[in-house]
Amino acid sequence: MQIFEKQKLLEFFLKNTNVNKPQINLYHCNIFDFDFKQVKSQIDNRELLVIGNPPWVTNTTLSSLNSKNLPKKSNFKNVKGIDAITGKGNFDIGEFISLKILDLFSNENGHFAFLIKNSVVKNIVFEQKKNKYPIAAIEKHTINAKKEFDAAVDASLFVCKFNTAPEFTAKEFDFYTSKLRVSLGWVNNKFASDIEKYRKYQYLDGICPFEWRQGIKHDCAKVMELERINGGFRNALGEEFELEEDLIYGILKSSDLKEDIITDSRKFTIITQKRIGEETSRILEKLPKTKAYLHRHATHFINRKSSIYIGKPMFSIFGIGDYSFKPYKIAISGLYKQTRFSLVKPNGTVLLLDDTCYFIGFDTLEEAQEVQNLLNQLDTQEFIKSFMFTDSKRVITKELLMRISFPNHSIYHPKKQLTLFD
Image (cartoon, rainbow, N blue to C red; front, side, top):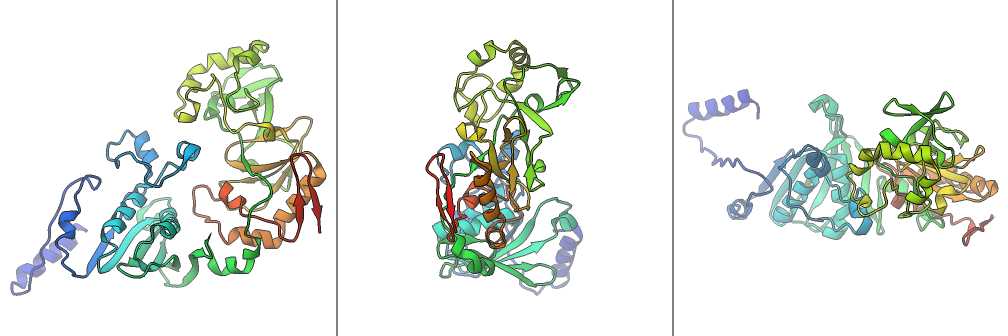
């Protein structure tokens, strides 16, 4: 509350001494330690309004800033296995606080209104299928966070009514015009960003007959992302050097996937393994220049924070396997709103992709072209848009891609064979 608003409130009650004065309790404390039971015990069946603007930051960001103001470590969303250590274990602090409030107060009579990131709204509605909070009249009122708070974040006012039969969809409105944009949420056990559009194209929703893969992950861009220059290479540190060509591959990033057909790369990288966990020392023994370069920058590898490298050979990479070396690939960026799929073709050597991209690998050009055509047809494109969230940090995900089926085609591809029939 602005200072002048507080002054107005104080002046009002000073001038109107006969007016019933509200009881206001102020608590100065850490929300992660605060015992809300003392607040809940005072509600006494009265109408409740919970309003707030929790932090628009993730636990990982706070950890990187060495912040101590974090919830107690726990896998509160029950993320399993490798997902918990490769990104999905990261969560928004605003989401944690919002779910805590819903846990505590959604059975009371009243309403909830929080300013939160759009990604948090999506997650709350998505998790509603599992949580089944007694909330309804769920609405998302989108705001211009840059204008209102000078924050480069997609955010909304999220509102709902407590103590009702659970609902599993939300209406999205423009905060400034009150115009209904779309409805998002669950339809027949499927989650959609645009329910009306999804209903039109839901016949495509199924299980993709291909295994979508994520590209190479190394978490060492300053050392591993290279440019060719003067017959040698230059890294992001500005160093120029020579390397043997044996482990050098062209690599594409999300920003490179702009054309329908791609045959060249701006960047190159050192591929130290052909499969996850493979020993790297024996390969490097035969490549003295590459070995010297990597050992000279060993500190960069040692300081990688991701736990996926713990206990792995020195200079390990992730997201590598036989599929990485398929000559033809259908690829898409995970970071952009662009839903067109690119065909990646070899130009002398196989091109790889980094971990911001997703791809399917093929042995023949004909196979790759046929699947690219299916993915880029109008119905498939509209189907993807019906359940992708353009304001997510990663717009395209493996889960999204694995929902794309081809019901009008019979696709058969055990291992290396694929046949398509109209």
